[in-house]
Length: 598
Image 1 (tube, one colour):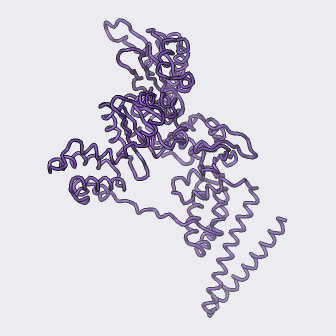
Image 2 (cartoon, helix red, strand yellow):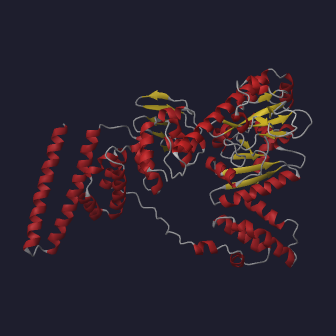
Image 3 (cartoon, helix red, strand yellow):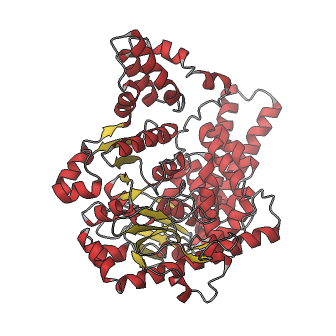
């Protein structure tokens, strides 16, 4: 766990205008900055960034959050990765539960930075070499690519030289060149003719970027006949194939615009599809689709379409993608599989039949549930007991990989119908209900109704100015509980969170802290994000006024109860007199404050 105090300090150090400004063109508009929302299509700007609140808000689609939230939504980073990214920009080390010593951590960070610089230089070198490589330019033109699309994906060329990179790095023997996968070193091998040489030679180069746009690896495509057709960077501290997707950095905005992501097998598919009107395409990197790939994609969109080559290898890749998707398949996710004719891949299909035909293929893609059934049935004869049993046997591990959900229930029912079995029998036989029985689940969190009246007014003020929570003491909470128990419970929860942040608590830190408490406060956060800033002293007086009104209403309720009970005892009569005296004092206090404001 990352300490909340560190997150609060980090948000106080960063400037959200700088963070958002790296990705969105912002213009000053009054106290805030305005721009086109990166999360939905719009022609006139409704996206605001408040340097005072350190918060962004879109009046069009309602998106809002802190610098952390922006990086998560825009770049698809996890919560922890977004914090790490911001911390790195401020020269801070995230204080997690890390067994690594400070010196070791500093060494790892320095090594990562050195490798990143090496890869950046290599990318620039390959890009420059492409300008002077007529054979590579001719190859790209033959594949139908324009100079504009080549520039967008920063395509390059590795010349046919054993040590072309020697001109880029003063120390060609540096260990970082080997660790980054750019150079192969065989100095320790006896009989090796050439001891050290460039990994990529005479190939069109495709830079692979992470979600921050940094080059972490390369894919090299041979232009003529030869093997391997594609040569990828090896696994390095920067690059792990099972975690990265080619083109994701370039496709992020297009994925949001299109509402889905298209997953292909190759670099050329991604680049060609982007040129032909499908910039929402990404590709796995010469490896099977992994659950991490799927998780990364589902951070970008709820709709994923896999489009692998139409040959046998492509269908095997689709099966592996199905298995990777099952742990993440849920009722609010749409996962489909597009199967092209065997002789085509997405690149060749769209060039032969056009963008409209490919768009129709996308629309007709097979839902996960249908592909699931096709795979488990396979060649099994459902007219025989053996064929039905084999189908169930093949389905069992796949169903067990899925979460309990409506989608799994639908697949179970379909399987039961196909294999002439009751759904309950399949669930029992496959032990689908066992994990739930073994785990003690917390009771579902009931969403509370939004508070109204004075409680809501106080909560809105505290969300905007959490440091004012010191004016809401236990007596105020008791009075609120008497008047509105549900609203008082939320108010108490909010006050505790505000107090935990300290006397200098800010809106952005509170909003980030409330992220983990459910969505009960989300409406208030959005409301505060929309409102203009108010003079702090006026807000404090508004809060004191609301507190006084709650006190007044609570006293009136108590007085009415005493009167209704008859005021029989001396104790009751004295209490009633005290209430009347206090109410008179509160009335005079309200009149005095109103006069002072005028």
